[in-house]
Amino acid sequence: MDLSVWVALLMLFIAGGLTPGPAVMLVMSTALRYRAPTAMIAGMGVAAANFVWITLAATGLAAFAARFPSLLIGLKVAGVGFIAWLAWTIATSDPDRPRARAEDAPPRGRLFLRGVGLQLMNPNALVFFGLLLPSYFDVTKPVAPQALVMLVTITACELFGLAVYAWLADTMNARFQSPTFTRWFNRAAATAMLVAAVFASVMTGR
Image (tube, rainbow, N blue to C red; front, side, top):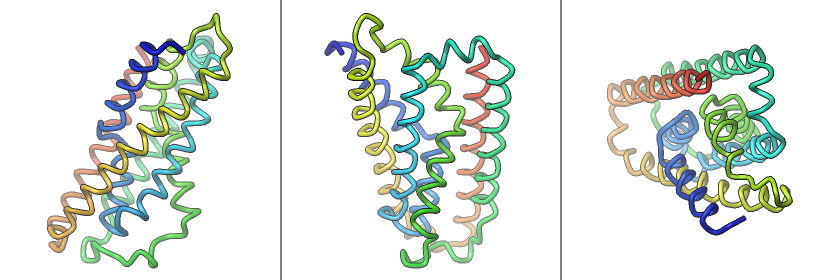
């Protein structure tokens, strides 16, 4: 991969990693309840799911989606539905217990799989991996080395962005001693998560 292409890819995914979306909201809500290190288990699940997306991008996801638009619509509807469910669980979480001990967190495997499921069903991922990422592949060169570089770069950017938001949520914890503040923040986070998913679904239909 040419250096200029790699720099462009790096800038794209640094911006993407720092842009609030469903994955960010999931990590933030988890960090607010169980602290940042626990929240990053879900973040690792998000990063792991990117391996699937990169593989699909390398094998022509955009071209496949163009041939089967009805399947793409079905995937987007399922993705928005899954994220709507996650948003509902955040919006309706108990505001009177804004902070739990790390040992009271859900099993690590469940948190990890929640991150994987969110990213696999995330319409935002369709935008980045389905429409944008394929254009960064040089078809005149072997695909596997390019995919490996992309995987390392995107994983680093993803985890960096999620860690920033997890840390910010941790530092905001003092304000979440108020159940009222917690309730409205959770509702705002859930709304942002759902709006981002719906917007990305519309964008992939263009």
